[in-house]
Length: 302
Image (cartoon, rainbow, N blue to C red; front, side):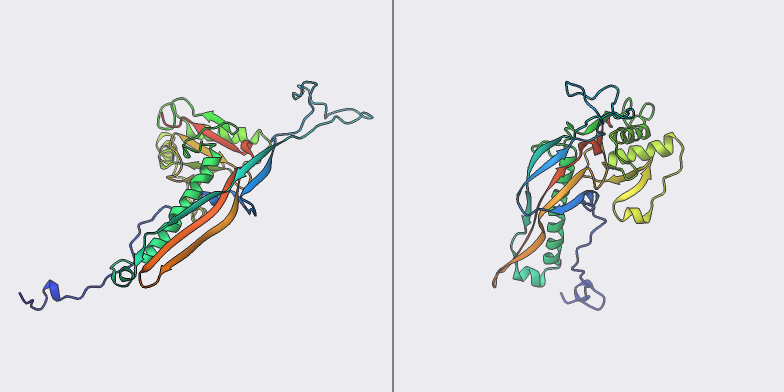
């Protein structure tokens, strides 16, 4: 049946080939660790024993009364530092698209090629961020987002966790973490609290509803780097990659170092007169340089 003026089948259509994205979460944990390059896939490094040097007794234990404070004319007490040799191996993060045909690139309603490039990069970078998180929380390889603290500092949350409005106290838990990290001789003015949105929800609820405080101000400059706000000296960073029932506190640029073997690289593999495949890869590894600059609040959700 022929259409008359104003009917649907003869109207023009303006097609937006760019896929619409609604505020996708970015991977930002790498912004809070030291970064350097490595020329080899196997890395040998030395982990310095943290804390203040002091005199030791015959058994090798720190003396109850330090001999560093002494009297005139005496020979200085001997102190020594120790290191633990570690070996790490580069991790490979790699993904590629399916073959995108020339026909699909020419006449599809969606800009398939550019959408694939963006999302493949996001996928690879996200897995790199998860690896950094895994190293900071000392997770096992089989369970990369499950905290298994061994060398890092830990404290169980107050009473019944952050979701209990009566006995939970997230502010106290954060301050305990500050104190424990500081007790190891660290400055804590730049400490980061990396948490899941669930913990962030309960933290905000405690501050506003339980304590009746005003909503903490969010700095637009801080937010650009992923920091939502500051609470008792902690820069609050929220990510879906963070495991719930655990809050990670650490000193950026000191606790963890990411060694990059191959920078993030994108390649297009072309099959003449057929189509193209997009490949994205990067290689590197996160190293837990100083476990005493890391504190985990456990059992935050009970």
